[in-house]
Length: 252
Image (cartoon, rainbow, N blue to C red; front, side, top):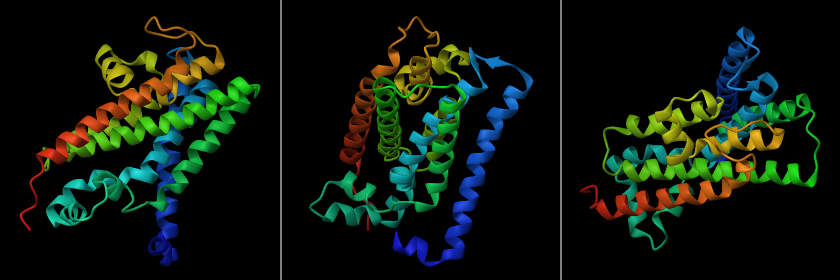
């Protein structure tokens, strides 16, 4: 972390570039709602809450474990073999090997949008709503970190096809920022339940604002986000254990 901030000009440019990317993605949402009053049952103010929750959760996960998608580079360089020599869990070593501080500005964008969305919707901060918001951020972050780890486990088999897993990880991020009710049936199956990105922002927002839910789900479905997080980490653990058991060394 100290090394990342030692070159202040470079670190500052990284923060600015990350901030601009977040603002561009927010602008995409705003441009969509310039043409229509609502999309998938959500107006712009509700969509800001969805974006704020989902983008903050993913950005925190990206800050903490986003570097695990470079696992193929670690395997080729033999860095992962060094981890295998130490008597600590491999996943813990990989996660703690780097923290990308330049992604802090993305977290700032998500939190700012979430606060603006809550004010625009005149959300009353009762103990129940505060608990739902905090739970959604925590479980959303857990779901997103689980997706990163699950993708890393798959990369033991897909050394030269990291883009395949990235399409799920970063495609899921894009999908999570949109109303789930406009997804096609295959997207509902993938990002609604198999990789439950709908629980990072969309479904908790419907519960928080008391809006109708799609797919015959109950209105309190947003409270099931911890179940989705447990499911995602079950998949992540299975993927990681299968991948590490398959790995036989880089030959170094």
